[in-house]
Image (tube, rainbow, N blue to C red; front, side, top):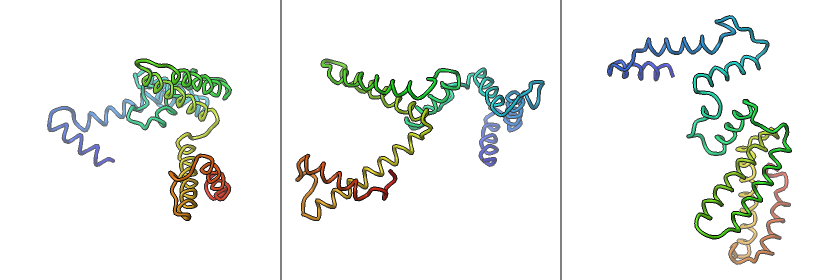
Length: 201
């Protein structure tokens, strides 16, 4: 990491943009500015107070709150981080009942958008589906569940059960397309029973 910093600073110095000393001064200034309880007269009661003050200072620099969550993050991670940042500023439900009610509300709005006709329907459906996903991520945050890991485990379970179902059909020389919905449902339940405990959940 240090090599990259020195290397990039050297390139910028050659173009006249800035010197390595400018980078070091900037880092030192930031450390002093963001740690007034160490370098200044402020007192911090505990680690939470330090973190709260850090967030306030970053926000004052224009780098706090939801704006500091990088847009290049994967959507699920970004949604989780944006929700956390908003919650730090007091924009949150007091408990999990709030986001769960929001999930119900957004699901109803998705169904309503799906029932609509006319131009713009696809965009409205996509927007409502996005709202539903965001509400689910907020519910996960309140439950202390990492939504990325939860979805990963569910996807693993689905893949294992689907492979089991396919193998059962393949043993009879058939494919999923050869089975009707009732048979597939039965094979799915059999796969769940056979793999219970073998795959997380």
